[in-house]
Length: 303
Image 1: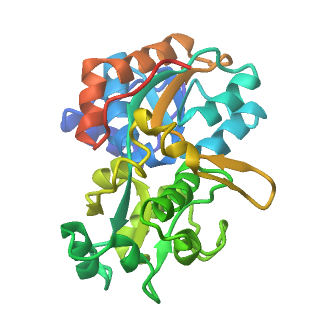
Image 2: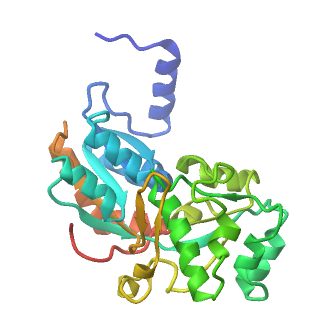
Image 3: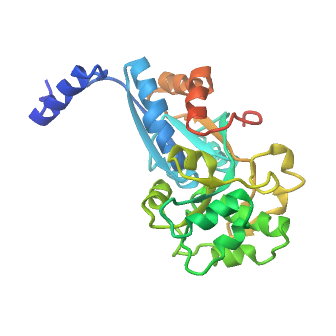
């Protein structure tokens, strides 16, 4: 029998006394690789609810969707379920023979997110009310902008594509360059799981990112027009298709509606639990949890 350390024993007794279910040591483990921006809803809502209902352990790994897709495709990581945003990361695992079908489970939109501790907070509040333009605030000297690496994370790519679309929409042809600098500007790039925390702490002033991530962290936002917020599939041909960029390594970036897809992976060690988890994401209960964390209903068809 595996021995339990004294501190762990005390922790287990505390959890039991609080009425918190503790899975058995030999309980099955569901491993879910998910887009890093979903950390709050996965780790605080969906994961615990699933673990309790199935007497299982939930183990989540959150990173940029492309980075996860490449790790999974290269067999450098194993997971039962993959949840990614936009179709391209799913295409990576599909081409590797790891997923036959991915279903839409949620959606979000791009917004300007600002830190309540930022010295520019009043300017952003004015922009939210329409008395200033948000892009003029972002162009102020000294303002610290954060984003993720567009080479590995769709949120970082979508931040750039949103700024490019905004330049077209507002007739500001140099807006992307003025706000972002280089496409892979090292002074602005941070790991996805830390981006919202840096805004909360005042380490950076603003980001162009997902409304769902901002909502989950209780951060203030500025809404963007449908033509540039990547939320409306009906805008794909008329607007979103106008945005495209190429990184230094030749990787193309193209704008697509922000839909989250979930797939059971072919090498899942817990295929039944994996299928049950995807069903939870699609269920009324799962959709309510996603909605409570700021996610919009899913759009479109299965991939």
